[in-house]
Image (cartoon, rainbow, N blue to C red; front, side, top):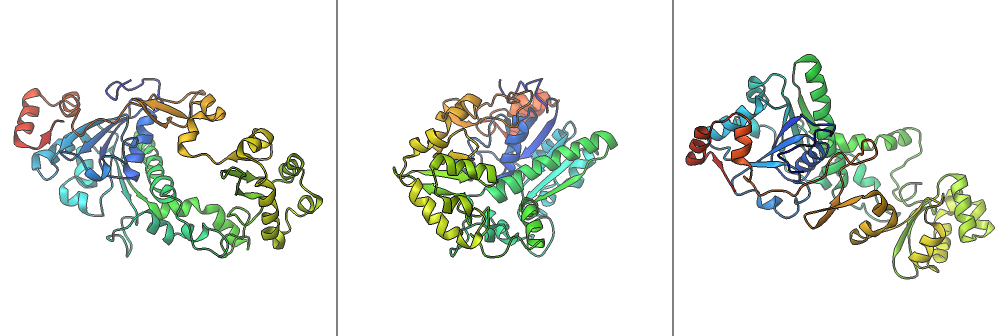
Length: 387
């Protein structure tokens, strides 16, 4: 199904969202919303953003693209007219940029008081760092999340850009936009959603704040149950130089690990003897190193041991569990994540490939009520462009 024909049974069918195109967390939020069936109109700059050309092929899927010159008064007016029939709009600029362009919250909500306006930043709209540049690694550093991730005696390990950009950023923005839309439909009044990665990453650390408050989580990384401190919650190298994950926290799961690997009484009796965790980890590592990954899959896979092989990206689609669920889907010859969550046991939509910037300019504006003469005039003036 193409982005011009939304799935009428998807949960966000009938919701229209304007995305002022950016990189990273903004496109991720747009993907999540489009995956759930929202009509997301991506407003690209003419020619597109070279930073988003390759890395964002999946993030930019399943939506229309119009190319607008936002430095042109006519281009700005085009966006404001689109706001009149939209439920939400979002941007990922530094604070104040949208206002200077003429597409800030006051400009857009003047055309549509019910419009929800989403703002995606790292530091947030205020505070001493608000105008500073930054990336995922910096935002999660400021929240304590980065400090907590790493092994005993080693430095912090950045977890790709999953915690700041995506979990604490784009996902937070999508969540906030949907909450705002629900409220706007009930009250007739739109909101401005300040989705800051420092706030989102901090929210993801909620459990660890609780543990720290109770004395159960210290600054000594790699020494706790969930940060590779425990021998029963870590990754291990196999005989064939691959990796497996073990997460046997609960006593009954740990007992099954001991049974299935025929571990000795010393390992059986000392699951929670924290001072011996480093020693027991070396011992368990030696045992696991005696098996290939396939042998461990056969012995531990699908059991209550809490086990899974550590798959490379190229292996994910072929694993029997992922294959059975359709965790990855083929979109125009490219494997990528299926839309999630599922509704009624099936993904909410079928993704479509990303389109070139400006591919849908004319059709999208026509659907929004622009006349053919108006579109031609905008094209001639350079306010908009087509692919």
